[in-house]
Length: 110
Length: 113
Image 1 (tube, rainbow over the protein chains, first blue to last red):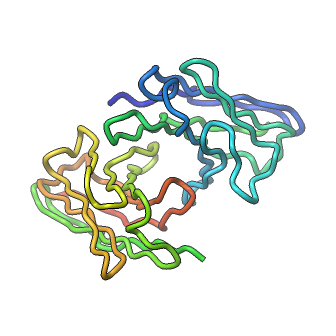
Image 2: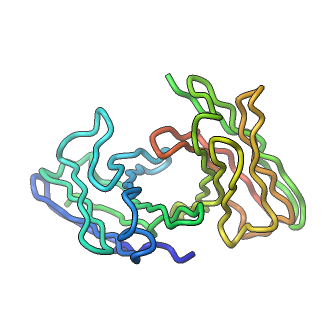
């Protein structure tokens, strides 16, 4: 049960786009649709922003988008806003009733 | 409106036990797969355990297998995490969540002598 691999940090200026990667294996990210992304502001509860690789829950701005290529999922935040500064986590079902999270990426809006 | 509310956290000595509860409102737990997720201070999210909607097929992270058990009491619409043989590395905020959309506020577990 190894954690999914995310870069520890990412950054961008307001209005720019930034992409965060989440790398796993064919047993998790590459093998299931159950790939999700969460946003967590300091001291707050995580918030689901992407589920099933690329779907957005109601109320999540379409500036957030998800995709997948092979064993790597990606979260793209377009038109960066200051309130997007937060920690982002990916997760994936890994078979055998196991769920994995990535180590998290701290997004800084410069 | 869906609400999940955890309780039962606190300070416990190494080797001790705690039982966490997650009471649901606006959501019937027996209709959902439910998860426990923890977050150590200043660290990332870590999945701990899951229980299927019919209460069978629990799943556990290797780090807690054999020490933690999750179960549900449908009459109370409550999910539980029984934690035994606690270690310092189990110190964390513990959250219950459904498939990810709904999370509780968390309950803090501190394992220390």
